[in-house]
Length: 211
Ligand code: PRP
Ligand code: URA
Image 1 (cartoon, rainbow, N blue to C red):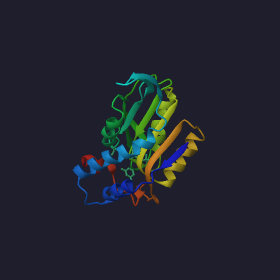
Image 2: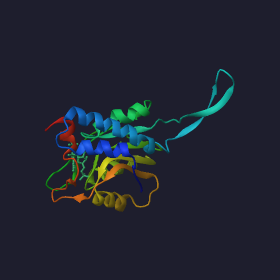
Image 3: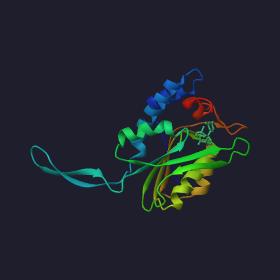
Image 4: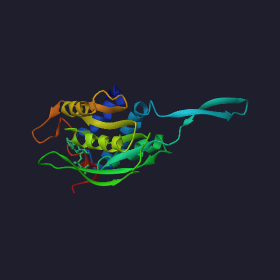
């Protein structure tokens, strides 16, 4: 697994506003989108492309276009949905699949409750979106899900990660170079309830309110 931690003052600024418990849901949602747009630059560094010839007003030249099949973006419901628009804005031709995962707050195990994804992902490049990498249970479940269906290239985009969660993903994924995690910030630790500290609280609730 390859890990990339963003190092950019604008990312740090926006993450700080997200952490603030007084930040309202509309501002929180907007900042999540903006952060994903910033992380997208790194997350899409190895997006698959092919040569493409174009005629400019002056001459003919070979440029680049996204290769087929198109990338598949998979936001993890609920909170990952808040990141979808930010990535779609920079990769508008991507396809989108949905995976619903809910962490059991007693056992901290991830439970899959919904999926709307192609059964066959052979050779597909997949971008998984989830703002919080806490114990890593949810992200491991999502990575396993797409790898089992044949995806060969998986990039996870997260906002906050706990060191424990990163270690868990690494221990499950090993050195597979085709899995990478791009994260805005690595926090200090998990607390006894499996929450990221200092963190930002429950990302789903802060985006969409209490269920
Ligand atoms: C949150 C978050 C991740 C998960 C992270 O979702 O969006 O999916 O917890 O925790 P983990 O790394 O310990 O698995 P949650 O289960 O609260 O669901 P929600 O998005 O519907 O709020
Ligand atoms: N899920 C969240 O939304 N926040 C955390 O800190 C941990 C899991």
